[in-house]
Image (tube, rainbow, N blue to C red; front, side, top):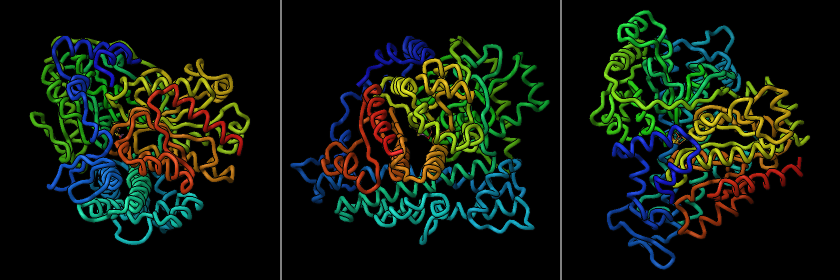
Length: 615
Ligand code: BF8
């Protein structure tokens, strides 16, 4: 496992390298210290065979030793994995539920937002056969929101998004395998119920629930949340900006939005232009204000407004070491509790805004969509007034230009799907790879993301990226046209002809379905199943429970998935064999585990080359 010193030596992110040194010299603890202190980590936990699902345990289970109840290693490993999958589906599902609630109340005139996603609302209404003639957009939006909410909560029947958008070949496959889901909460409920002690003891049956929960995650937690956000704030379009810690300004107020719920970020962006806020900035002696983004809230406001992305989950403590962050507005998920302690060493105010994420010792201002504008102003005032409390600062100049907002709608306008398919057939672009997922101290910070992306584009693979992987690639300047200089000759020519970067930023984690939509559109044009096309999905530094469903979303669609960090399944030969081999017979794709990013690139290119033969 990499130590903190190795991270400082080898991370490609120079700002994080410097800031980690600054924090180390000050004796301020970060994720990298705590990771070192946890070594060696428990092998039973790492291999997924520690069972803590009843109080006869905990049991350390292996091939030779069953749990106290008699559960064997296959049952324990798949049950643990299924519970992670359920937790991730609930986490993204909660976002969806909240955003759909805001969509409905906005449509009913009960928030300070204005609906900006007319196109998405009408598209969904058409797909769901919602009556449109003679009705207002707001009325239609309420019906659409109710249908998407049902996908999160229904107790019987089929998921509407899945039925409307998944390719028929996939729907038939899932039905044949008995893994068509009912809804997110129904599958999460079932996953938890069947993994209580003395319930499902057939690992194959538990595996089916795992796949079923993954499909529910994809079509409810993922697509539902993405659709809701698009209905509210619009479908992203390419937008040029600058990213990285160098965007922060010494003489300006710097405020970061962090987490996974973009509505407050949207309200903050609207509020910065108010006279009252401008006057206050002037009163504290600042030149202006910079709003920057962390994690997925950051990527949502980047893809729609060009708000600079600053860093990802692994860098959230480090950026506070600049001493230049006047406030972090943290909604929910992937927010380390430790940011409160790091912030306390500087002047930074941490403001939590969601009841699911309270951090002791920080200020809590609950977000209320009915008063989003007032809450945004109040938060801005707190951040601006804190500007005068800055102490020692450690500015980091590294920044890069970037283009964000490559939704499939935008890609279709740039290329036309038929034309893009022809380009792939010609071999100028050999294939498409999604680079997604988290940061993980089990890898050198940002190293796997960046090494893999560079190697893929050198070999004419067009990369699409979302989530913390995207932050890593944005910071390295790979999401800009000039990065085509390191691409292979074919990809370089396409990038220059169409004026696109070789790495296309498609959004936050819940925008992974944008990449799936693009894959589906190309498969439809080719009249081939998704599993026949030269596509791949890679999560080289994944860490979160939510990533389990992310992997399954691609896998169950027939897209091969490459993981850079070993999942906690190693103790069960049956589970590993199924997920890395046998599942391909059923779903047309399998997992490959490859910790070395250059080797991963080789495997991805190998799969892409093999599939090109079928084009
Ligand atoms: O949903 S990539 S660390 S920030 S889980 Fe979290 Fe992972 Fe980042 Fe967003 Ni996604």
